[in-house]
Image (cartoon, rainbow, N blue to C red; front, side, top):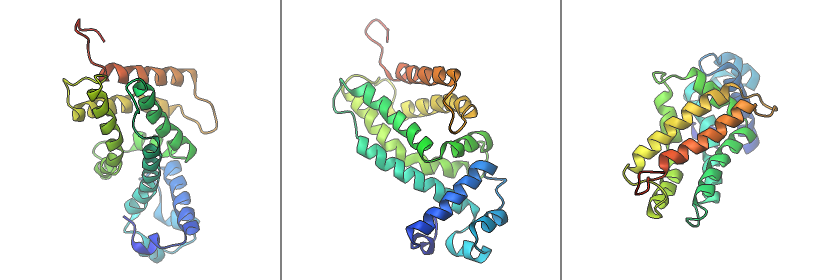
Length: 214
């Protein structure tokens, strides 16, 4: 994480540094982002950079953490489903909150870059997984409530359900991100994929009835 010397900067300067860095990572990709060119755009020396950050990865994860922390607050404000009647609509809104947040805060391009350029064997992949783990607590609690109310299957553990839904989400968001263009409405195909994703997630989570039907 960034050194306290960066964290203690005025908020305007921190926002400037992270905003420029986020744009560079989104535009060029993580590996292709040149630290020297980034420093030139930031208007700081290499010595100043290492006074604030340990390395390029530290800067990248500072950008990511800022977004994830803000998103976590948004989800905390949304809270958990208030009743069984509201359950599926509330859980769907949680997913939409995440999507809107990324779009509104210019993180969709970062998501595009990660999905296309950071494979499982990339040096920063595991750290990305750890970075996003705190968001899982929101959905873990939501699934627990769903199981208590008989709306979510109990023959599989919450950990397995989270793993399944995360994997399905990645499979759907991959092609959706490829067609994303900032400022343009989603394509008809993207809208169909989005609707199918919601249906698929619910199909995975809902229990079977006594006759083996969803």
